[in-house]
Image 1 (tube, rainbow, N blue to C red):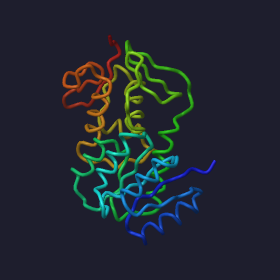
Image 2: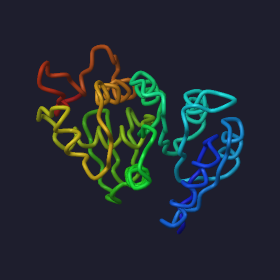
Image 3: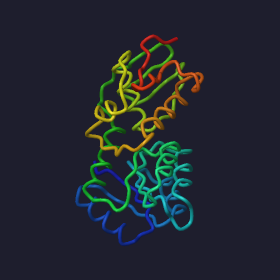
Length: 228
C-alpha cells in the first residue's frame, strides 16, 4: 500500500522538489502551504507521516506540532532553517519524532522519513514486556501503566524499548544512539535527555524522582529490572 505523506511547507519551489523526489520513491505526497491549511488537511484525511516546516507564514511550526499532537500520533519530521538548538529541543518536547536542518540532501530526508515510518510500524512481534505495573507491547507499539495507555512518539517508544530490552544494564547516550542506528537521528546536546524527560513524564509516578528510567551520573541511563 502506498504510504501517504503530508508536507506542510510555504516554500513552493522546495515543496515541488520534495514532492517529486518522494513521489519517485513511491510515496503519495500532499502539500499544504500554511500551518492552518495543513492542520485542516491532516484532521480530515489519514496520513502515515507529516513533514513540517518550522517557519510558516501564518503560525509557528511549533504551534502546528502542538496542535497536531493534541489530536494525533502521526509521526512528525520537522524541518528547521533557524539553526537554533532550542527550537529543536522544544520541537522534540512537544512531540516531533525527528528533525532535519535546512538545507538538506533529498536522500537524507528520505532516509529520515523511512526511519520514522519504521519506528511507527515496529517489528511486528506480539510479545509484551512486563515490569510491575508497566507493560511494553511490542506488537501494538503501546505502553501501558496500570492498564492505561501512555502517550509517546515513535522515537520515544523505540528508545524506551531499547532500554527495557537491556534492563539492569547502564547505557550511555552514545550507546543508545548507536543502538538505534539505521533509524537516522542527528544528535545534538541534550537530544537523548529531552526524550528521556518525555518518557519519564509518561511512565513515572514522580518524573522528578524516577524509579523506572534512572540516571547514572557520568555514565548514562539504566532501566530498572525490579519495579512496583
